[in-house]
Amino acid sequence: MAEEWAAKLRLELTPTDNLSLYALAAYSSNATCPNFYSTFEGNFGVWLGSTYEFTPQVSGLLQFAVDGIGGDAQERHSVMVGLEFELVPNLYIKPEAAYFDNGYSREFGGILRFQTVF
Image 1 (cartoon, one colour):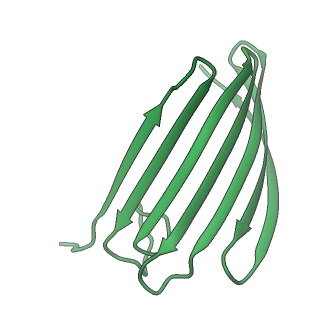
Image 2 (image 1 turned 90 degrees about the vertical axis):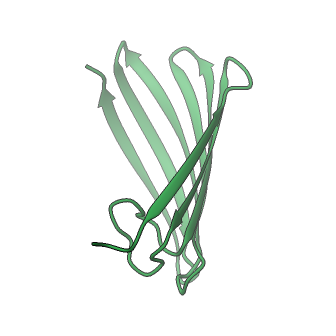
């Protein structure tokens, strides 16, 4: 029987019709070994994000994250910005750019995702 455990708490708010916000806090009892339930380093992780709907077809995305808090893990920070375009009903293109800093290196990256909803 495993003695490790993890817990997550998510809060979502929609202050206006166009803006939605979320906060996610997570705890893992095992700071040295990420697992299925805690894919982050350290004991704690925090994610803050928002989506703003500019038009019914275009939304902007923003996310800040910190993990590696507690234990012997190195604290890591990241920022992601993106757009979501609905080309036709249920077909989305999502370009995203991200910055990642783990205390040892700083990295920039991006992704272009195509998504459909059935």
